[in-house]
Each structure stands twice: as structure tokens, then as C-alpha cells.
Picture 1 (tube, rainbow, N blue to C red):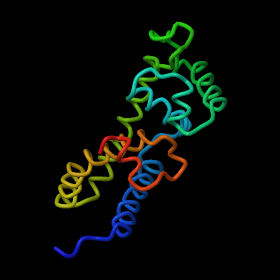
Picture 2 (cartoon, helix red, strand yellow; picture 1 turned 90 degrees about the horizontal axis):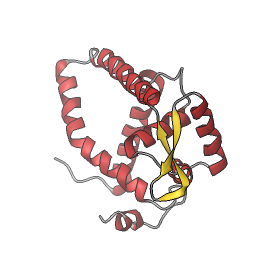
Picture 3 (tube, rainbow, N blue to C red; picture 1 turned 60 degrees about the vertical axis):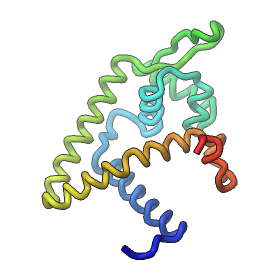
Length: 170
């Protein structure tokens, strides 16, 4: 094993891996017919994190509150999002997904897995196994990076080095 990569080399390599994975997902695995990317991202977040205030959802998704309001209204008309009473504040509402939205998200995930299965069949069994092993190592680390990114106060601004790690308790 050679010398460890510099921070810049590691960032470039990891960044290229994530760029390739994103391109593969967006261009070949995802079904883009029924839902815009912004709608899918918002719905997936609400599905993962549970009901949330519209302003908090807008902030986490990095869009303006008026833009998120329009998106949620459109998704409500389609029967995919709903407003729920906030148990902590009777004057406020939370945004949640509907059963139809959950079904749509589950179908989209199933389609991505089916397409991935077809692509994996183009690899040798050794390549597929190596990819599986890599995923076993990378998945918990990527999950932590995603959690750390959610801890960032403003992901559009470049925080000082080490700030996100301190905020997330690392």
C-alpha cells in the first residue's frame, strides 16, 4: 500500500466517485417521467425524516420559502403531500406525505433497483462482488456525511474548516 493521499487527492477521488454515481442514478436508473427532481428530493426528505414545517423543508432543500410553497401546493393537488396539525403549535402545520406518495416513492425505488440489476449483469461476478464489498464499507460513511451536511447551518456558504464537524459533534 502506498502513501496516503493528500486531502486534495482524496477529495478529488471521492468527488469523482460521487459525480459518477449521481450521473448513473439520474441518467440511467431514475424514472423521471412522473416527478421533477425538486419534488422527488422534497418528498424523499419528508419520507425519511417525517412531517416537517414548510419553512424548515425549504431551508433543508436550499430553496426559498415561496418556491417551496408552490411546490407543496402542486404536490397537494396531485394527492402526494398533505398538511398536518403541528402537535407542538396549534397555529402551525406540518408537511407530510400521503399513502399515494409512499407508493410512488416505493415504485420509483423498485424501478431503480430493477435497472441496477440489469446493469450489474454486465459486470463479472468478481467486479460485482468488489462493488458490493465497497458499498458495505462506503454506506455507513456516506450516511454520516449526509447527516453532517444536514447539520450545516447554510450549505450554500462555505463554513470555516472544521465547523460542520464541531456542530455535528464529531
